[in-house]
Image 1 (cartoon, rainbow, N blue to C red):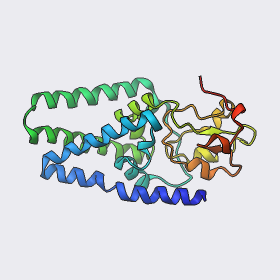
Image 2: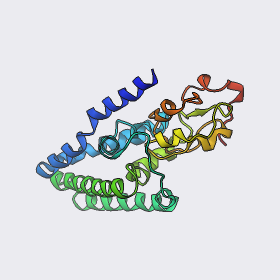
Image 3: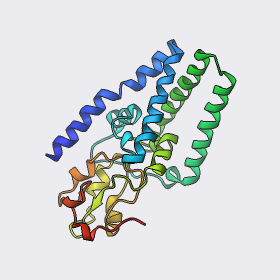
Length: 230
């Protein structure tokens, strides 16, 4: 059953990844196509209030693109501490919004130039993401993505991954399977994954041989044993 979950995830990603290169190519030909980037931005932040960073799983074309072309199943690389630093994420958030905001202000009223501002942003950040995917981590960009950062802040504690500390043996299989390079087993004493960058993909639940992980608390531990993250 869980293998079906993973297969369905890959199928969904196969339906969304191509949107990324399509919008980039179309945008350079027809700039207003760049406004489609707004849908991804709104979707990512909007869904976070209910499901955390679930948008980043397969609904985000860029995330799906990196998973399909750069991610090796069960061989996730560790995430460097500097890439996940709060300072870097705040810097990227400010840089992107100031740069994009300035261009939209200067080009306000000109649909083509405003659309091109989004196209240039999407093109440049995708190239940066590809470089990070090759040299650092497949989803390296996802850790500094401004929308992902906002989603992790607004969606903290939403639809958490529950962990049965009695069943967990710290084997590390969940960490190897996580496309974001997270380590669920390190939070087993808390009863749930505390890292807000979880994209709710379920890869770790499939990899866990002891069925210690699940997004349904009743399938992991008794309700009375679940410890709420402070």
